[in-house]
Length: 144
Image (cartoon, rainbow, N blue to C red; front, side, top):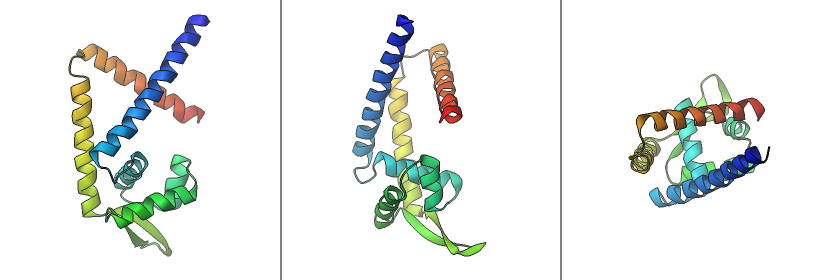
């Protein structure tokens, strides 16, 4: 059991370091686009728009947190509100062309950074790592 506990401790420490680097990297790539803002913008792009309440529910964030992040994205011209054609009382958030371009640029930069960091890994190691990350994230989805 001690070995398992040691492994879990190592995973926790490495995931914390990974999250810290991800935040710092996001800040360097686009200083005005925090990791949370990038994540929300990417979600809006992936979903082809959604409501702020849907973002809050999906990411388990407080509505005021989402509201602040969306306001910042709107001020940067990255997000716009559109009336839902099915329910005119509802506003749906969508990336603007500018927001979609910034998202594409940041995504390309992040992919390149991963390629560089993993350049000396062989295909088997990359496949195993990808599989383990998928497994970890799937478990997260099942267990909250």
